[in-house]
Amino acid sequence: MILSFPHRIQTARLLLRTPTLDDAPAIFERWAHDPEVVRYLTWRADQTVEEVYEFLRRGQAMRESGERAAWVLTLAGEDSPIGMLEARPGAHGVELGYVLGKAYWNHGYMTEAVEAVAAWLLDQPGVFRVWAVCDVENQPSTRVLEKARFQREGVLRRWTMHPNVSAAPRDCLCYARVK
Image (cartoon, rainbow, N blue to C red; front, side, top):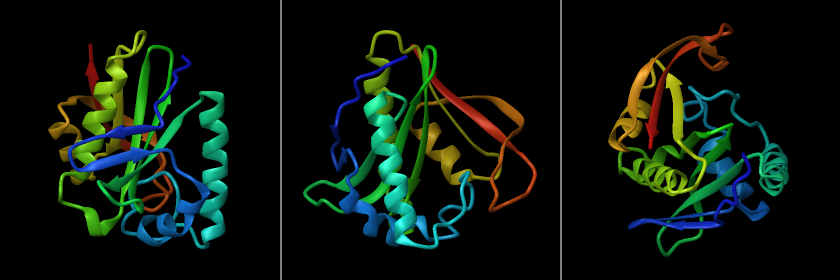
């Protein structure tokens, strides 16, 4: 499925916007280098800001091809990223992935962002499902998805690698919103 993703999504407290290369230093500082933040992600903490620049370059190319789209989260009225959310389209649904800088945890920001992106996606023709997975031990992520009105569908056994937790594939919880 090819979607024409918006470059900006506004919520009550946030602006989600397309990332730029200028965001790399803030991304590195706020989450990409922090082992605690990336604990349950599929990649290890970045060691240099150049790794973030390369990630952003790949993301720009994927957005242009329609393969996936990312937004950085910024507080309303500010321009510096506090987190990131990515949408990865499939045949008739879109998978979400997200990360938020530790200083911004427990304020409802990611729930607000996930809710806004899911609502936009489910308004699109051909999108019948928006879903996400999280490690079975990642309770903050389960709370984000449940507060954003996603329903738990089950456990995906040995679903994905979380190299910061284990060298073996980890069980994940699957959540979805459908229309």
